[in-house]
Image (cartoon, helix red, strand yellow):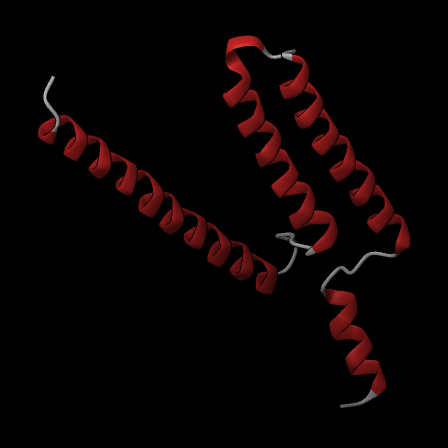
Length: 112
């Protein structure tokens, strides 16, 4: 493969420079600090699990965009995003299905 073809393939993937990594790192540290600080200080009150879940989702997006360089700008990237979405959906089915089965078993087997 020629050097120009290799460069074109890597340029198409949208790899960022050091600035993108620094921004991603700062955002990841800030989100982690917000989650730990908020949970330890009780800033979120009764909605703590929901706020922590939202911060976790935002941090997943930060990692996908700044460190894994996921985007939907090219057709190859769209297929990667589609594969990621299918994997996330399958994982959600697995986790929520397991919790649902465990809850039903607990309700039907334990005396009330």
